[in-house]
Image (tube, rainbow, N blue to C red; front, side, top):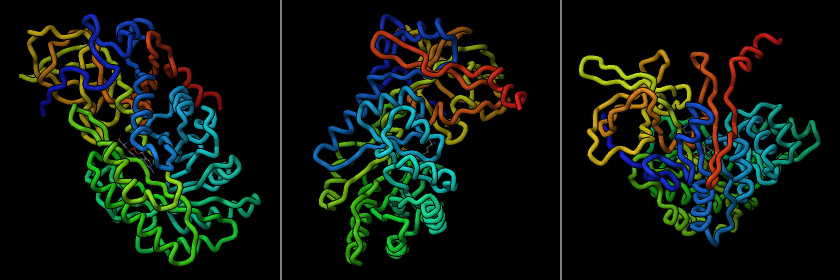
Length: 425
Ligand code: LLP
C-alpha cells in the first residue's frame, strides 16, 4: 500500500523555519533535550478539540466524559478536568488516575463489561456518578457489594442497540455479535427488574456502538432506538433521567473528513433533545488523537531486493495500532523536505522481532538518513495507553507542549523500574 502524507493536516502541527514544530516548539529541540522516541502532545490542540465539541453541543443538557482509555496521562487528564470534562473509566486504575488528576467523582462514569467486586466497591466508596452495567450477573454483583457496604448504587443499563457502526470490526461494539451491553429486546424488562432492587437506583440507559465512526447515520439510528427505549421504559411507569450516548467520534488520519460534529450534535438535538434526560457523551479519540504524535529517529536504512527499509527507534510496542488494526498513521519528516526533493518508496519499520512491527509503506517520503527524525501523526489516542514493554523495551517518555515551552509529563521507564518488579519481592 502506498499513501501520500506529505505535510501535517492537524492543528498546531506544522513546519516552521524548515522544521516540524508543535505549537511554537521545534521537535528537534525536544529530541535534543530528552532523546527519542517520545510522544508529544499539544495542549492548545486538546483545548481546541474540547471547545469545538462544546460549541457544537451548545444548548443541550450534556456532560462530556472523556474516555480515559484513549490517553490516561495525568497531565492531560488534569488539563481536561480544567476544561470542565468529566471522565469515562473502565477500571480502578483509570479511576485512580482520574481522581488523582482532580476529576470530581460526581463526574465519573464507570463503564466496562467486567468490573470486579473490588472495583465496584471502590467506585461506590468514591461516589462515582454512575455505574454502566452490562449484564444481569453484573447487576447481581453490584447489588451484593452495595448491600455489603451499605450503599445504594446509581446504575445505568448499557444496551446493545444492534447497529452496525460501519467501522473496523475490531472496534465495533454495538452489534448483537459483540460482547457488549444487554440485548435491545431484553432492555425494558431488565431495566424494570433492576429498578425493583433496593440496592440499586436505576436512572438511565447507555450505548456505545464502536470507535472511529465518521458517518453520522449509525449514531442517528442508535439515538432513535434510545428515544424509543426511553418511551417504552416510561410507558411501564418507570422513571428514566439519564442517557449516556457513548463515544466513537472519528477523526482524520489522512486529511479526509473526520466526523462532522455539528451534524452529530444536531442529530442528538433531533432525536433526544426533548427526552427530558440529562445526557452524557464519552469521546476519547476525538479529543486527543489529533493532538498527539510519536517521534522516532531513523537508526538504519537498508535495501532488500528492490524494497527499501528505514528502521526507526520506535516500534509496535510503542504504537500498536498498525499491527493490531492495520492502521496507517501519517508520517511527516521532521526536517522539511525541499520542494524538489525526490520521493522514495520506503517501509518504515521498528526494531521488534516481528514482521508485524511495521508502520507501513510510504511512497512520498524524502530519502531518510540515519539520525533523521520522523513524526507519526494523529497518535494521541490509543498510542501511549496501548503500549507494552515487549522485547523488554521501556515505556517511552511523553512530552507536553504549551505555546513556547515543553515539559516531560511522563519519564521513560528504566530497566531498573522493570527489574524491581521481579527482584524486590
Ligand atoms: N465509551 C466506551 C464504553 C468505549 O468502549 C469506548 C472505546 C469509548 C467510550 C471511547 O471511544 P472513542 O470516542 O475513543 O472512539 N484501541 C482502538 C479503539 C478502542 C475503543 C474502545 N472503546 C483503536 O486504537 O482504534
